[in-house]
Length: 556
Image (cartoon, rainbow, N blue to C red; front, top):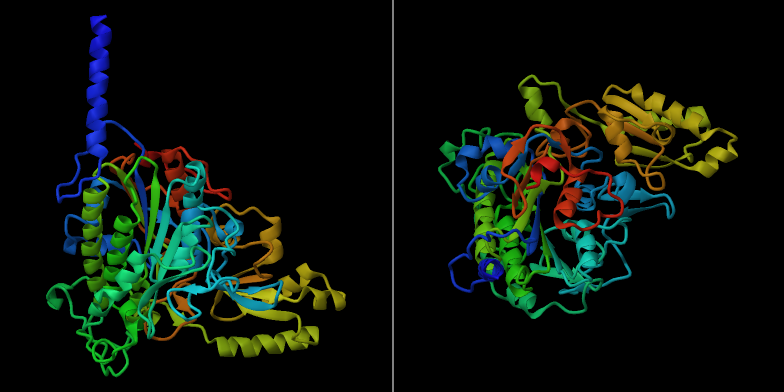
C-alpha cells in the first residue's frame, strides 16, 4: 500500500513538472525544458531560398551563437543533403520539401510550365477561381490546386481532426501556398510594387485577420525601405569577392554595384516596395511577420501540434542580382543569422524550449557567375538560345517538313504535338530520339534523354536518376536536355539555378529541438526524406505521395 502511494505521488509530481514546463509564460523568462518526453507543440519549417550548403561553412566565423550555429551544434546537421531531381527551382523545391516526394509524384514540375492540356503556360500556384484578399490587385489569385499530393502540414491537420493549425509565410506566393498544402488555415505573402502589404487568397479566407491589417498599417514595412550598408566592416568580408566588379547587377540609377546601396528606389520614392525583396530587410520583414503570426494565431499554446512554415525569399532575389560570391550575399546571410536568432529566442519564450521542433533547408542551390568562372579559367559559359532555336528550327523543318510538331520548349524540355506526329504516320519514340540526337550535337549540350527513356527505365543514380525524378508522365515534355556544367541560360550578371548539377542540388539540412538528436552525418540524404522524418517523429501518416525515407540518425 505504501509502495502504491509512493508511486502515485511520484507520478503526480512528474505530471505537475511537465505541465509547468510546457505552459507558455507571458513574461521574458523562457519556460523550463520539459523533463518528460511529449510531442512538440509546434513544428517550424524554414526554407531559405537559394541557400547553397557552403553558405553555412563559408560564413561560419561571422555567425553568432544563436542562429545557424545553435541549430547546427545543438541539433542535427545533414552535411551531404541533396535535391534528387531537376529542375531545381522554387516551386518544385518547396513542394518537395513538404510532400516528401519529387515532381514525378507531386506534379509541380517548375515555377511555370507548358500545360499539354490547354497548350498554355501556367504558373505553379495560380488559380483564377479565387480572388485577392488584402488589395485590389491580381496578386492573390492563388491556391495549391496544381499540387497533386498532400503535404506534411496536411497530414498533421488530418491527424489532429483539423484541430492543429497551419500558417505559412513567405515573400513569394509559391513559397507560402505550396508548403501550407491543401488544408492550411492561412498562407500569406508579400505584395511589393506600389502596395507593400501582406496579402492572401479567398482560397483561405474572405477577409484579412485584424492582426494582419494592423501589421500592414503599422509602418513596419516602410521602415525597411532604407539604404543598405554592410552590417560589419566590409574589409572583414574576406569570404566573398571584390565589391566593385562586372559580375553583379545594378539597382536603378546606380553606376556601380558597390555597397552601400542608396538609390531613389530605396529611399526617396514613396511607393515601389518591390525593392525591399532585393535587400536583407526582406528577410527581417518576413521574420517580423512570422513572429506576429506565431503570437496572434496562438501557435504552440496547447498540446495539439501546430505548424508554422516560413520561407526566406530575399536570399534568392539577392543571389540572382549579385551572385553567390558577392559581398551582398555574405552580408545577407550574416543578417539572416541574426533574424534566425531572434526567431529562435521568440520560440523559446512563446512556445518553450524543448516544446518545438524545427528544420531548416533550401529549395535549391545556385551556380557561381559563369563570367567570373571564365575569368578565373574555369570552364563555363552562356547558352545562346536564339542561335540554338534558329539552328533547331531549320533541322525540324528540313527533317519533318513542318515545325508544327514542336509545341513548346520549357524548363529544358521539348514538348511535341503528338497528333501532328501521328498524322505524319511516324512513331513518337523515333521522333523523340531524332530530336534528342540533334540537340546533343550542339556544343553547349552535355546530355539529352527522351520521354520514352524516362517511361521505360528505372534509373538509380547519376543525371538520368535526377531527371527521371523530375519528370511527370502527364505534365512533362518529350525530350530533356542538360547543358554542360557551369553553362546557363541567363544574363552575364548574377547567379541562377535549375540544373541537375551539384551546385544546384547540394543544400543544408538542419534539424533542431524536440525529438531531435544532437549530431551530424555525411551520409547522403535527400530532400524528400524531410517530411517522412518529421512524420515518424510525430506519429502521423506520410504525405500520400511520399517517396523519401526517414533519416533514422536524426531521431532521438
